[in-house]
Amino acid sequence: MKIEQLLEKGSLKKARPDKEKAIQSIKVAESKLEESERSLAAHLYESAVVFAYMAMFHAARAILFQDGYTEKSHFAIAVYLQEKHPAKLGLDLINKFNTQRVMRHEGLYGLDTDFKKEDAELAIKDAKEFLKKIKELIKQACQK
Image (cartoon, rainbow, N blue to C red):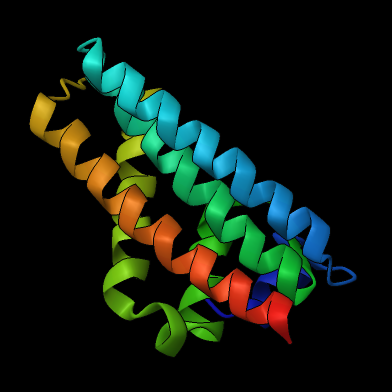
């Protein structure tokens, strides 16, 4: 699927670029990451995975806000990042986002989920790496 198709379906919408929303979305991402770490410490592994992905989701939304888009689909964000920012983010990070998106989906909607400590630790590691990179990109954009 391509961005143009997502725009036609309404999964992505053009908007005015908004640096303030981008910065606010980063703050939400940081909060979700903290919640993920608290969940891991409490041995709530499913919650840790879900919150780690939510940190990645809000970080990714910051890029969309910065670029002048809004989303109506988690999948649309993955497509957007892959099409618009593969060089800046790297396909490895985009793939980690997508992997955690699927894990979150299984955690929320799956019938047979049994997340382990290792799943939560990996989700948090991926979220930290993703958030760090997004923050660098947002900072660079705000300096322009």
